[in-house]
Length: 149
Image 1: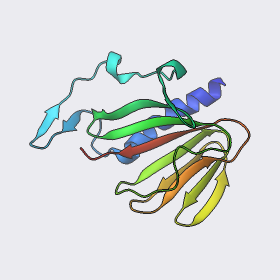
Image 2 (image 1 turned 90 degrees about the vertical axis):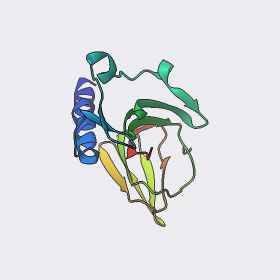
Image 3 (image 1 turned 135 degrees about the vertical axis):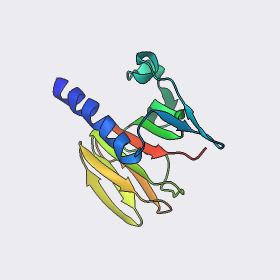
Image 4 (image 1 turned 180 degrees about the vertical axis):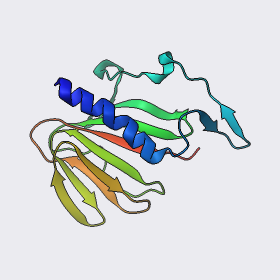
């Protein structure tokens, strides 16, 4: 279990680096760049089921919501067996999924693939995609994307 936690702690910053070429020190606004103060109190966000939002298929936990850093987000979704958070869809932003636990059925542009833990899934912008729980245990995965502000 400790090794899984260590891998997750290492992988989260890597995904942010993929999506965040300019680092964490500035937040973009409509008119100019504004310096945001970061401290240990707002830079550490520990997962807790109690702090999660309930969903029809399980729960979700925002490690970083769209207001933390200029729309960049990272969310954990926990999905019950045989369910999905929503049907396949498309949007103007690309996003990554990263499977932590369980088996996911990934849908991308008419094709599907079942994958297990420590698998990354890329969803290009404007391409229909979706993810559902293909296993008999809870599916946990990260959703990483930037939401326009």
